[in-house]
Image (cartoon, rainbow, N blue to C red; front, top):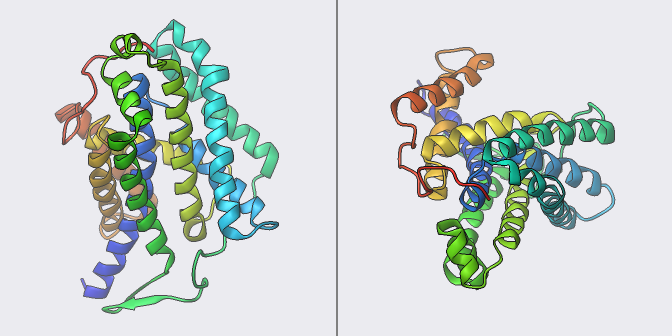
Length: 296
């Protein structure tokens, strides 16, 4: 295979791997805080891209993206406060099922609001025809924004959980909910904040990838499947592992098109997930979360 073609596949895998990793990080934040899998996480990425595409017509691009992230974060908080907190009393399994129902509800609401049309965002820098050439391969400058957003998310979360009082409180609730309550921490408030952060991360991912892949009302389901695959692949609860797993899965999908038709690349994802669940249910790098699920 020519070197320029290898680089082209590599860059394609990098783009999708970063997006999968960002969605998986959102899964992990919610899992660590509540021990549930939030299957509505992909819809937050869809909402971010769709809201930003709408606001970009009346606001500067950077302000449209910031507003989309903020509005999606608020929607994440609303989802937890209005719907999931009530269902959580009946157990983890019911709550997970509720997130699937919410995913469908958000998707249908997006269909009513935006229709079936495909939308996009302007490139954050450069234009659609401007490309960067490297060793014969060419790629859009938007790749820098995709990789940079993923790095920013990881750096920001690391600093938040290690150095801020609220981040430490959230880690305490994740480790021992009852013990955190005895120390004066409100676990319900921490869960609400976790949903807001998770939704904002998903929205940012949806915004940075929209200029490259475009967005539409139904894209959230696919992102949720890929994000969950990456989270399980790396180890539920481990965000650093999610980045590595996301990049690995993105590369696997990209290079798999060399031997299988592109229409079947999603089959590769499902095969990886099934093989992983059979071989090592805790993920390649293990999970930082408790081995058993607990109610929140």
